[in-house]
Image 1 (cartoon, rainbow, N blue to C red):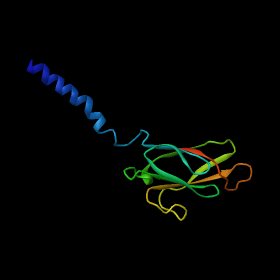
Image 2: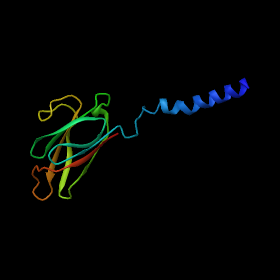
Image 3: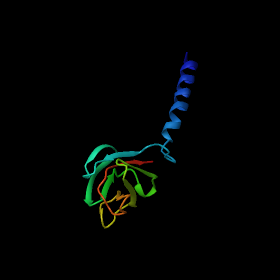
Length: 123
């Protein structure tokens, strides 16, 4: 009986070990958000807050335990004629708080900054 328990315990350790090291290389989604055109945080995972800093300029503050400067960040527009892009990955003149992503959104017809919602994913 004790041999069965030892094998079960060893099996449990093997099953748990990969999960304990999963944070290395971090190829999974660590933070995500749906940002509305007015800057409101519609839905989130590990995002503290978001706000509209100006026309077409948005700030998304990610939880402190995720380093945005070392992350892969993907953006998807929520409107067909808007194109979001990452302006800065940390404090900027637009978004001065730590661990903040500055996103600028452009109108694809005019090339000027324009309000538009977007989805953000941080890996």
